[in-house]
Image (cartoon, rainbow, N blue to C red; front, side, top):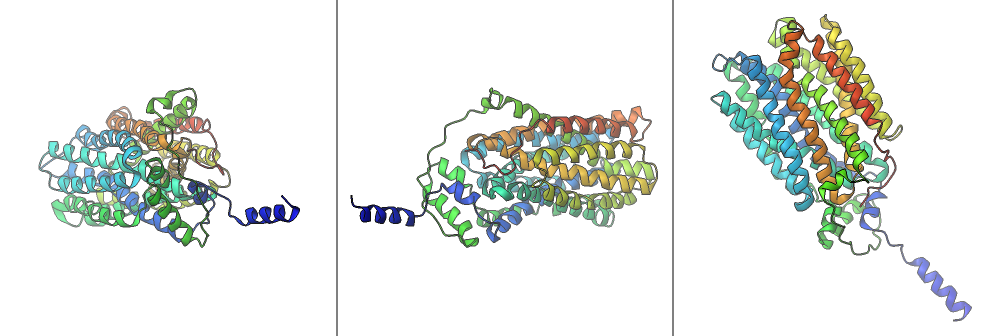
Length: 457
């Protein structure tokens, strides 16, 4: 070959665009309108979930005062906890099914399930009917949350992944605030059927499920693993075009090695599995123990159900700045440090809340607890799907969430006992929650740091 031919060949090779896998093409993109659309579409579903979980704390307080039901403290705790039993089962099954049939399919199906069940709970005529409906709602909720965070994580560019997932979780605050508004303004002002009307509003996800089928793409990693090359390429091109980035050739996706769920406890993943499960468990224990009982606790402390709903609304408003601060810090401090610091602040706030007696103290400390706890939640949802490979990601995220839901079952059931030990006040309960936050902080510090690293296939 002559020197001229060699130079020509080299120039031609240089002119050819370098090959990138589809996942590498997604990881290199700037944040653009397609990412924003995915975030908002997924986030609206997330907000509906939060609205439902928040709404039940107001609804239970109202049902307990309904002469037809006249629930005892133990019956109230069961209405709260039965939903978390459903969430534990739903989280474990939803993540596993999502790894086999797709993230988008499960996301849509779960919205339908808990939309229908909310309507059923609004028509409940007995405690048994309430419990059955609440259990089915929990199935849908539990399956949807880890699947949605996995989907957003898999489409996020590497340098924006943590922030996008925390911002997805920030829609939880929007839903919870809407629930607090419904609890404050709808339930007290619509008579004995106020709580039923609130649950009818909670059935709106059934309509939104139609929208998700149109506006939420299926995971590229999942499509490639299923050999659906054309669909995977269209999904990547959609995000590239939105970002004004030219396409480059991609090799055919290779089927990923099958990873069995039991490998969560194999030598490669056991340390991170124990750490993430412990973090999920103790965060759920404190959060659901505190916030599902918050309206009832404040009603007992200050003697007014209507006032307690208003106080809970004010405390809930602090969730949004907590999420936004966590979204900013997660790409600066990293996942591990941000999560640990927010959990440490939550522990301090929970202990201070246990001693708060005045309205001003309850509101100020409650807002600090709300901001720090929910900021930690955002980072927890960001880090969980990052620490596992694609074929295990949905199942692993669901399993971690299921472990957390076990704590969410236990905590509301223990609240009547905590209240009895403290003579009816909240002191002992929130000291226990403070200890749980400390344990979650220690576990979080043992997690691997994935800031700036690509997802593992």
